[in-house]
Length: 325
Ligand SMILES: NC(=O)c1ccc[n+]([C@@H]2O[C@H](COP(=O)([O-])OP(=O)(O)OC[C@H]3O[C@@H](n4cnc5c(N)ncnc54)[C@H](O)[C@@H]3O)[C@@H](O)[C@H]2O)c1
Image 1 (cartoon, rainbow, N blue to C red):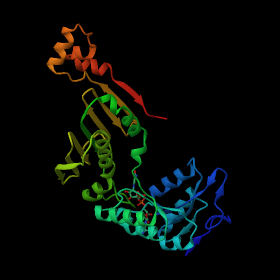
Image 2 (image 1 turned 120 degrees about the horizontal axis):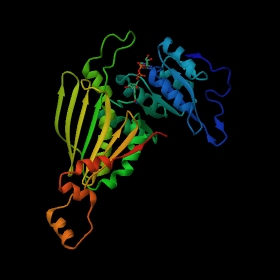
Image 3 (image 1 turned 45 degrees about the horizontal axis):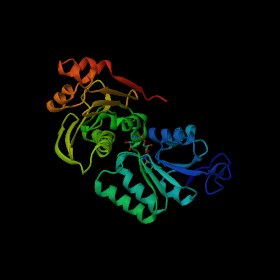
Image 4 (image 1 turned 180 degrees about the vertical axis):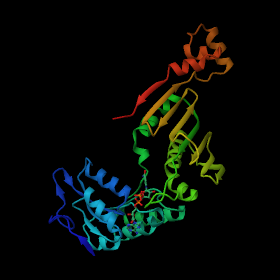
């Protein structure tokens, strides 16, 4: 059932989608809540030709709110009806986590590309099934892992080589307790909150482990506290990774800390900054004696580290790299 038509536009669904500069991407959004509104705004400000042509949500209230953000989009009460109307290239799935898999399957079966909000799926088997179907049909899949594309991640990746041999990566995210809507008075159970918030810290940790070393990640230890704190220790080749995701820690923080033989960096996803701390470099005693015997020039930072003043040197050498555009 088509609930409403776009403001009389002939080409809103199934019509011409050409725009100067290339073919317009026709986007449908399933779910019309908070993230759907963010997606609609992002599509509207996209630098490539793209337009939200349809939205689906069983909630009339949610659809009414969406009309302010995507006034030209046709509205439906289900994905099934939206797909039946045709004229869509990609479906953005912005519904609660448990519905992601069936909706993703339905969109793929109908031959549409998909963008699935995090958590992509609630089990790795489901995630693999989705990817297999997409592969068989030559369709594209994107997960809502947007922090991979934000400036702290990009700047940190560029600075990695300057840190020398990476030895340790820490992913630390503390969150506020999310409250149920509507009403907002009943806190979600901590396991449901963790399911919802774990993806960002986990995929960032795996991303930087992969950029910094070879091999596959191996989970060495995992502890899930009742109050909503997850600790994990991961090994990948010579690297260790630690993960702390907590609902109990304050202040609220989201950062990656990457430590190498020549320094460390701190990528802050709340402030949008990357701080690089220049370390003295690691030399063994033989290297140091050889350099001194050959009259080698003093390295102001490493030589200060010998007399235990390295910390001051490191802090005063800290470079703040603003990642605001
Ligand atoms: N990437 C991020 O940073 C980020 C941030 C917040 C939320 N999210 C994710 O976005 C998703 C949506 O979160 P939200 O905060 O927008 O939730 P929300 O509760 O505000 O909105 C969800 C909407 O989906 C609708 N819905 C439920 N089942 C549906 C179905 N089968 N078909 C169509 N509509 C359906 C509901 O009626 C509701 O309007 C969640 O998976 C959440 O984890 C991602």
